[in-house]
Amino acid sequence: MLSNSLLAVTAIAASATLGSARVFEMNNYAWSHDAGCARIENKCDFPVTIHSVGKAIEGPFTLDCGDVYSETFRKDPVAGGIAIKITKHKNDLFKAGKPQTIFAYNLDGNEVWYDLSNVFGCPFEGCKLVERSEKESCPKIVFPDGVNPGGSNVKVCTAKKDVELTLCA
Image 1 (cartoon, rainbow, N blue to C red):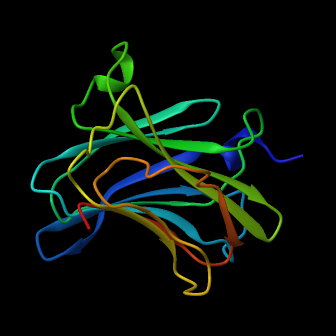
Image 2: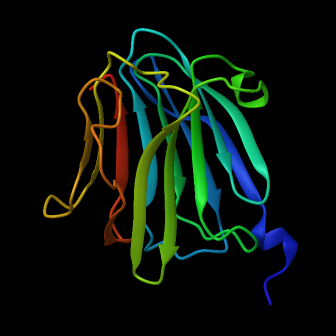
């Protein structure tokens, strides 16, 4: 059994810089270094707030335009999947009925199942959202105007490649 210290999630803010952009990384050292990452790049001209939710809520992380959030794919020992919740304002996650976009994933052996959805409205209405794997042959999810165009958005691909959501693509 892994010790709690190995399961601890460490947030590294501003661990790398891309010009003036910041990269926020969440690493779970109990998982293989062969696993890919869930990434969110903010290309919107306004800041967004990220919370990574499994059995615990990690964050908030505020991403300005050009900033990137990244976490190694992990499996929550209680919840199973992870929901990365994105809001326009820092405390909206904790306010009833505030719109959220959710990048959800579930690590399943060598595969990762990923999804994109909105709840309580569409915080990025009017902005294109694109979620895609680093592996080009894997299916992508596109919300042309920030709103689900309909149908199921659950996709699956290798867990060895990153899956990235681009906001305001």
